[in-house]
Length: 68
Image (cartoon, rainbow, N blue to C red; front, side, top):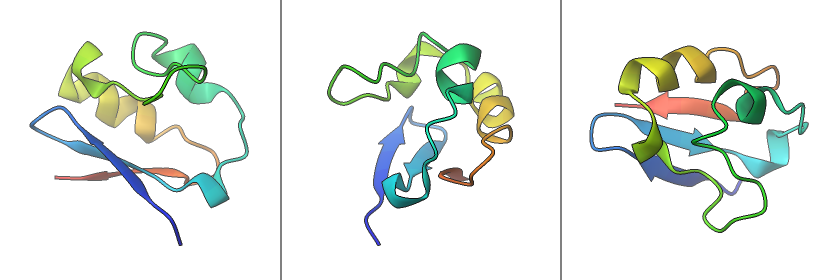
């Protein structure tokens, strides 16, 4: 299972592409962090750790999780 990790130095977003259902919750909630057309598509430096934790908790598929 492929996983990609993106860190802001305090928390790491773990993305599992095979679980992602592309609901768009991430992009709508934190558009400054998630840019699907860019590479890398997640830039956690553009939000606070609290904002990231709150957004990842809303991921409907479980494709996004956190590692501290």
